[in-house]
Image (cartoon, rainbow, N blue to C red; front, top):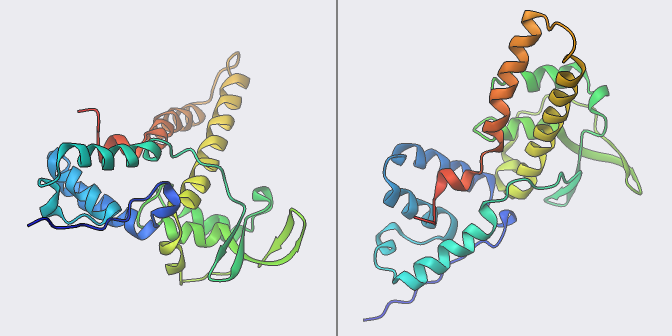
Length: 219
């Protein structure tokens, strides 16, 4: 008896929510040494294919699925989207980071790692706030105040999240390059040198494609 399967295959990161991404990452941590299990988990979380059916797929269907995903998962360097809409409300990205309030800055920096993990929705809740005034490309957002409800970000697509993350990654790289260039002919204080060395190790971690961690389709 032939069983028909209906799958929802995302064609870009907008089809993958933060909630789904975090759930996948959490499960993959337990199977990092089992490629077959990782493949099955990716297809289950991203396409809705039950794990029990992965081994039953013919090679053509399997390659079709993985190639479709591979078409966009290798690219996480997405542009920052300054204005987004969630449930009919427009949210704007912090328009002037140099004038960010001290409270917002402190609340962001309390997280040891600036990456997409369980705390990411809290960071997005600080960076994006409701727009109170808008004219053309210019806008003003609601003054910062602690908002404990960050659940709305779990349903937002990963295109938005990666866009925000890589905005800071690129900003960090530009800043690091500028600092290194300006200090090439001068003696760097020990504490600054330590910070630069740490930054140099962190940036490549941000730049790694999650697809290399999730699934290597070339094997």
